[in-house]
Structures are given as C-alpha cells and as structure tokens.
Length: 98
Image (cartoon, rainbow, N blue to C red; front, side, top):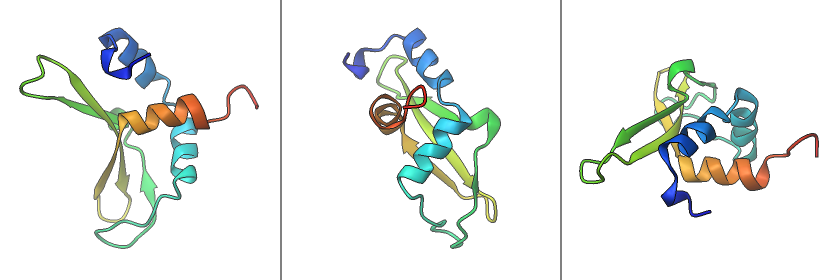
C-alpha cells in the first residue's frame, strides 16, 4: 500500500499501534544519540504528544505526524518522521515473539 494514500482512519489506527514498547525498540535500533542541546542522553516520551502532527497549509487537511521525544535534562524535543516509524513497525520490529 502506498502510505501517501492513507485514509485518516488508517493513519489513526497506525498511530495507535505505536506502543511504548515499539517506540523504545525503535530508539534502541537507531542507537538514539545524546541531546544536541545539552549532551545528556536521557529521553522520555510525552504521553499526550508521543505522536504529534500538523497540517500543511496547502495540503487540504493532510496530517504530517511525527514521533516526539523530549530530553529529561533540558526539554529539547527530537522528532522522527512518521514514515520511518511506520517502516520500523512493518519491517524491523519483531512481531508475535519472532
């Protein structure tokens, strides 16, 4: 399926499937680096903002979601493109104990 042709309902379902376990596995997989602002390597997921998004002004309501983490030391935010998270969930994350 071409991810650019997702319905809002499909996107909502995919976003809901990003559990804390999946998110932590993604960060481990990419070997998340220390914060570029303060150098501390301690991050957390903001519960109500784990996946944030915005509408492109000229896109007629197309949502651009991103996975967001925050530095526990200084509050710096780091975001990851949803397409990368989706690729991880579909192709790299172990499913059902595999």
